Image (cartoon, rainbow, N blue to C red; front, top):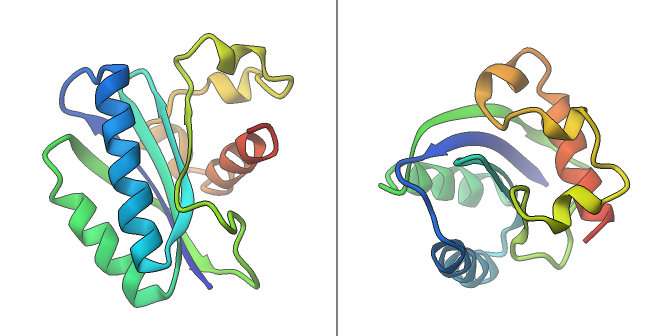
Length: 138
């Protein structure tokens, strides 16, 4: 199983309705492609992990790179896994700017780290820890 984690910045402020529409598109497209994963959004930044067949995930990442809703994609981590870390999730999602996010027990200084590439490129495994922490609490 191949996975890829990246961060990017929104090109404009996204409303809850915009985020819900994006999420609905991701879930449908990913389900059709056999891709699972997680999407996080905070302070105008995205972090996403995609997992599936390598050629499918790479093709989807290339398509995402052309999406005008975000810019500055930074590949944080990629590799292979024994099994999916987000099975059954065509796209898990958490808006880290929401009030509910701050009430999660694991919400700590680590989870307050901005979701930009600079903070994660030095230690890409942090991105995986962040995503998995939210998986456990959804």
